[in-house]
Length: 151
Image (tube, rainbow, N blue to C red):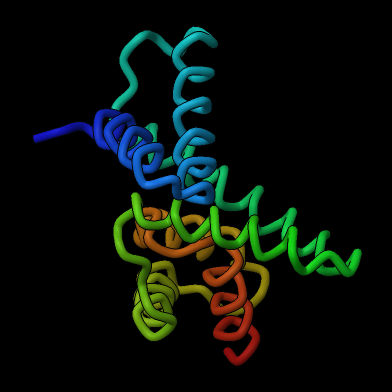
């Protein structure tokens, strides 16, 4: 079984052979983050979990850049950022649907006995942990707010 890092290395070669610029840029960005993490004293070995954290960070950066490009009327640049984000997402476990996230949040509200918006932090923390990286914070936050404000 190949580690995520090995898979990424192999995909760089394949993207080069197939002249897939978007894929190549996305995978190279991931590779460069991995190398940065390794040299920043995190140790020479970083596991798949760490790689997924790095990928999530890169996806978030791509999406933020895309929003800024859209505001600046540069759809071409925004599309490129989003295309790279989509390639990066392919390395992560499948994302939960909104209904699945809502089910998690509801169970956390029940478990914590949350009574309203004052418990937002507690519910957010537990919900994000339960979603285990399969839902972005923005989605979780929106659902937590909606459910807590209706209590």
